[in-house]
Amino acid sequence: MIRFTKSLVQHVIHKYTGYSWMIVASREMEPTLKSGDLLITRTKEVYERKDIVVYRDPDLKSIRRVNRIIGVPGDIINANHGKIYLNRVELTEDYVTYPYPFNHLLPHILFNNSIYCIIGDNRSLSNSWDEMQGIRRSEIIGVVIRIVELRRYLGWLCRHFEG
Image 1 (tube, rainbow, N blue to C red):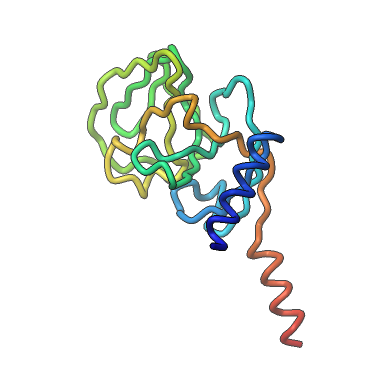
Image 2: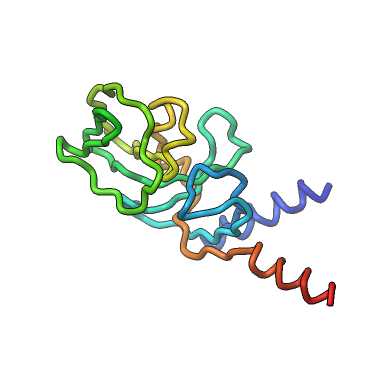
């Protein structure tokens, strides 16, 4: 009942305001986002490269995930020896501190229509290039506009009640 109520409230708020939220439950966006961070999102008309977005998992619609957009509709993405190329130019990714561990080729992929190319910042957690995937515009819930480091506040709260 509580889960249903939370989902219903979140759905209504998102539908009428464009805002939503989620708590990060994985390490695939480290160091930018950490497990336990609270993300506040807002829908946008147009999503851009480098936007961090929350989206519905294409296979499991009830699951929300968070990744970074590295390609927008019309872009050509490929990879060679751990480097990603956007429209045949090496992608500069100052937010990636864990390089991709694989050294194989990814063929050119054209992202067309309303398909965005996404991948996590922590490439060392990816098992294959399958982690770099395309999602439809309709699967994007919103762009991250605020990151709240809950562990910082919860840690303070715990220390406050201990002493």
